[in-house]
Image: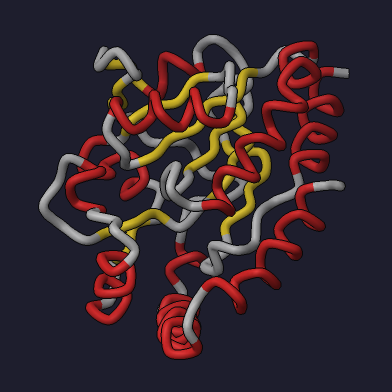
Length: 216
């Protein structure tokens, strides 16, 4: 089953996992985010990536531009290991990781979650690529991806036992729009997928094809 089918199946299961009122609030929040046009204003093809510092699972500082200096970069911004849609996407890229490397690129996933939570995500999903913490979401913010979580959604997250500020090592209720970027070796975005609906993700196979075309 490919990622699109897995995401569709998970989306259908939401109706049995959440109360109708929770689903209604979630849809309202998605509509507000979509109407804000934040996704349309995010960085896209032709834009150059901004500089920014991230942190490894071992809490070491790594500059985004230094990652790109190593060659083409497939960069994924995800919400957190608690998000089942994000976990599905991360595992899908793990399956293609060898081919991404063979094409001369590297895959890196960035989240607001602290290094401790990144480690848990890595282990739970058996991932071998690099996961990076984005302190205060500065890098995601520079890409135009960060939004404030509506109050009604905060209550739902808290009801599920998700203390997002604690998981982020922060004091604010913010998340990134999930997004994937293929960045060429010169620091320019070659292709991107950004969608305000966190249940939608770009096709890993399409990004792999873009990498392979550039390396041919």
